[in-house]
Structures are given as C-alpha cells and as structure tokens.
Amino acid sequence: MGHVSRLLCLGDVSLHYTREGSGEPVVFVHGGGADLSYWDEQMAPFAERYLAVAYSRRYAEPNRNAPFEPDYSARTDARDLAQLIGALELGAAHVVAHSIGAVAALFCAIEHPELIRTLVLAEPPVLRWATLTPDGDAAWTRFLAVMWKPAAAAFRAGDPVAAMRIITDSFAGSGTFDRLREPVRDRLLRNARDWEAFTTSSDCFPALDRERVASLPMPVLMLSAGRTVPIHRIVDDVLAATLPAPERVHLPDATHDLWADQPEACRDATLDFLERHAA
Image (cartoon, rainbow, N blue to C red):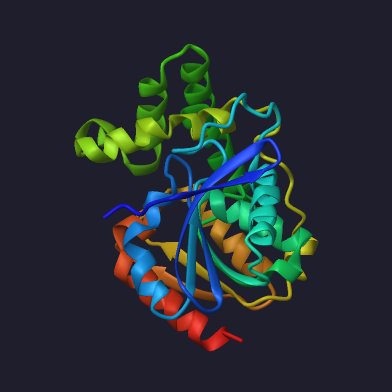
C-alpha cells in the first residue's frame, strides 16, 4: 500500500517524504532507480517503535527538481539529508540507507555526525575504494566499461529505456530488465531521471575520505548480499575494514537489491540493531 507523501521545501529543492509513528526517528534513504515507496512495507513495522521517515532523493519520483545539478553526486544527497533532518527537527536520527543512498548517509555522517545516531548501510557503492585491492582495479574498469559509460551514453542519446536495461542487467544479470514484472519495470523507468543525474554528472564519484570514515563515532550495521556483483563485494570488505567496529549481517540469498530480496531479514536485523543502540 502506498503512503500519502508531504512536500518539504529546502530552498530551491523540494523533497517528498512520508512519516509514521512516534519515538526516536528512523530516516530511510533509497538507492538508485527507486523512490520513497521502496520502503512502503517497512514503514508500519518500524513505526510500532519509532518515528519512521522515508523520502525521495532529489531527482526521484514524485519530485520535480530541475534542471540537474551539473556536478550532482551522493555528496549533494548528503546535504539534502542533513537539511531534511534539520527541517523536520528530528535531532539525531537513525539512518537506514541502501546503495547510493548509503553513500549519501556516509558523507552526511562525516560532515554532520551530530545528526546521526546510528547507520544501517546496505552495500554503499564507494566504488573508487575498489582500486585499493588487488582485484579491484579490474572490477572498477569493467564497471565503467560495461555499465556506467554505456548507460550515460544512452541517457545522452535520449533513450532511458536502453539506459535502464543496461543498468538493471549489469546488477542482476543479462536479460533481467526484460523479465521484470511490469510494475517493477515501470517504477524503474519513472525513476530513470535519478540514474541520469548520476551517470551524466561531472563529479559522479567524489572521493570519500577513508580516515574520516575510520573515525566515525556512531554504531554501524552493514548488510551485505551473497549474490551481489563483484565490485560491491570488494568495496563492502574495504568498508568493513575501514569502519571502527561495524556489525555485519550477511544475506546469502540476496542480490544488491537486498531490502527488496530479503525484506524480513533486513528488517529483523535492523530492528535488533536499533533496539541495542537506541537512546
């Protein structure tokens, strides 16, 4: 079931969000090609104990922010996240984030640690970190050649369907996009602008300072998928070695889209983590 969203205006950027429940705030940050509805089935279970807040990042549905910021990146989303937490007067929030949304959460945490009580990170693609490992250079080069550059070219050619096919098949296997159920494919295409903003940005992979990540003061839970793509596995291992003392939950049957693949397992692990780290 969908939730009725509200509109938050932050200067020249407007973000749709939804909230449910009361108590310590839990802010959900979706990944690429998704929007706030990604968290619909999580809202009620979390709202039993917390104030659950989900929002759409600036170029995701139903937001209408235009034109694209030329150097848009997860750092941009981190600023939006910090402003949202402040504008909604949430104080220090638990932040539950997936994929590129989790990179935004990390940037927000190093810039505004006072705003984040805990972090739950599902495979943040800090992809430049892959090059710090022996196998990572090849994975990084392959990612750019097979997915990122062809998708960007398709978007620049005005063909979002081809771009989303490239992106989806790169993450989930060849032919996946064409096998998707129509509602899922429609959701991806509705949110193609989110991917277009990233892939065509002049600064799509800003450097995330490992020393600052290593000094993060808040508890961190990492959710890692057993059937993810190689570069995500490499980056997750680097992140786990960088964070001071992360807790880690492995979901062997999940792909990178682990909150969709294993929603109950992700929820149970997150609720257990939050219960142990609530104020």
